[in-house]
Length: 257
Length: 306
Image 1 (cartoon, each protein chain N blue to C red):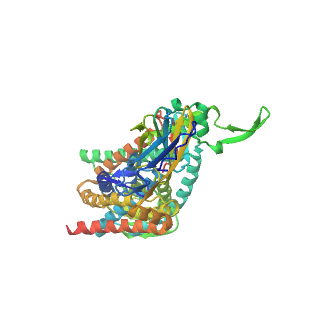
Image 2 (image 1 turned 180 degrees about the vertical axis):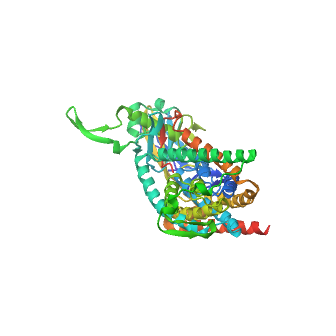
Image 3 (image 1 turned 135 degrees about the horizontal axis):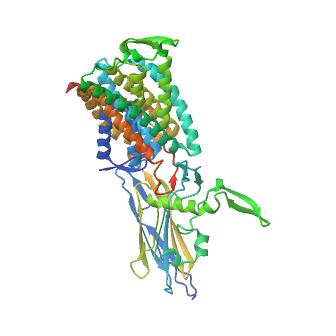
């Protein structure tokens, strides 16, 4: 969608958003130190209503195992780990304003938008039961602590630089042209990413664009990774031979000197 | 100069890693230990996932031990027969240990097991070695004669069946104690991600009463066999060996090991042991410290822990 939609004569013409990424392939080489993904686009609204733009970049899902430190007999030990399924390996939002000013709680929750509303859960800890005559109520075994656990997942991921929310990350560079930059750290997972560009007006989402982004290893990194995956035993033997060979080479070199 | 590691999927500083590899290699050549108990915690601290750190470190240990063994072997300071018997036990132990560790990981207690193993084994061995070697140094300073080691060799060592001659070590003992020792070290090496030299060296000195000069090379020889096996198992089963990481480490490691093997001739045996004891003790205490300090964040990512 790089061309503007045909102008409509209707007064309630819906606003639209158009966007693209400067790079759709991030190539991970031996010198990879992270990348900056630039999203740019335009709000197409014949009426120039006040608009907010939210850009979400989401990486491939990576289940998270998390444990809580508990004090037993004076020692800090790990509790049984809880697995959070469906947590993205990378999740960044950039927006023109803080998300809670752009839309209401219900809208954000329904869209699963932002770190506070991101849908991640621990299905193994959940069961359904009948409560107050209502069937199939989802109950978490983590009980009231559930929010603590969820917050911890977000906190640990934020500390690793993999989750973040930039409430001023989208800037309007011209009347309707906007630009956002998302920082991808070197630790970001490999795989298929989605960039969603959402247009909000008056607290409601009015348009959305999706763009794909691929983070992939290239060259020697790719070859080595595939070697280790496809022929793991040969890979292991080769690793050992390299180690033995270099040990021998070093001792031979030092013997002469 | 940053380098992206294809399996660990993180970017690290290459010269720093190479220097660390050389330092650990030096310690390895000097004491006849793999050095894994030093390197694995450092790698984890640098942000490399623990499972990758453990597996790649095993490969690094293969290289620096090989470098050291060849040098010791040339001086006829390796008892290959004793090393082979120890390694036989080590191989059985490594298989058992990998299985035990897999179960512990599923229970989420891998971190605890690793920390406790470090604290208990490094702490106890470090303390014992330190007191023994300091005693020896003090006795020598006072001009007292060194205690004759022979008369304290435990008698049960001779009572067991399956005796074998170890001419290089001047021993004629049952193979059961060395195999049992190798197995025990094999289990620990799988759990702690180390070669186990820090247990083998004192056990061979104090338990088997092997001549101290033979111990270092023999220990390195058995370490090569077990860590080579661990590397292949880890690569084949878990795909966690990072060949780039291992190569960066071993470039420094093999050179450091050579320097270490040469430097070892310049020190007295008991001084070397005192130094090693100190390092072992410090690492053990540092690793165990986490059990007693209130954590900053009560939640941790339970990736695997090793």
